[in-house]
Length: 302
Image (cartoon, rainbow, N blue to C red; front, side):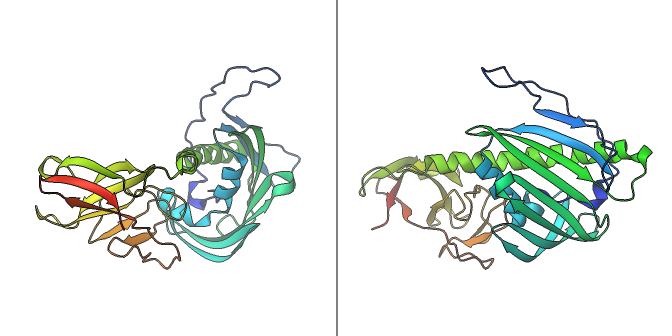
């Protein structure tokens, strides 16, 4: 998420409302959102600070920072495309296109030892801009982040406006990221395979069901859908979560293909193959059939 779309710097969206959480023993009560004024002592003009408490673990935060591929999908209002130039365990460098068509080259470097990542604009609009994010775990799944914005060639009287725009932008981007991180953590927590190998699940009469239908079978979320719009079309059962990072696959399949909204991975439901070049694939381990009574029954494949 930590990539500054240059077209957003002139935003004047109002700052987030401060919301305090309940006090706890030995914990300092802090606002869930806050924006601090610029620090004039920086060599690159410091235009402001965004601070927020997020309901996720530090591990999910690191994962999100390194996840360059989700930008044009989860943050489609800001990013139109991204081309990764290099990536590794400590960061990435990419060519990013904003929705306004502005192209920039940016890099992100993560330093886990000091719980910090820095995003720099190397080329293009706002070249030289830096965004420094520090993360402080305050509970197992609660992280305080402090984000400082540095933008070159900003006059002193314009710093507050630019800082406010970046603060508003980061509020929106983190709103979108938090939803993804929380959902991913929930799916990681529930990935326990239970039940017997011969267990079946009766969904009801086919003519009374609406597809696609999300169910939970043997502890795993699945989608049951019809292969075509025909009344007697074969039924397909596939995982409700993307094998990449457990994104939701609940959108209606198109021409036998389902797409993950987090990273744009596309999967062929007939084979489970990823059509966007990834090595991951859907595990089509369950199936559905209509029995003699007209009931749809889900079972594990032999």
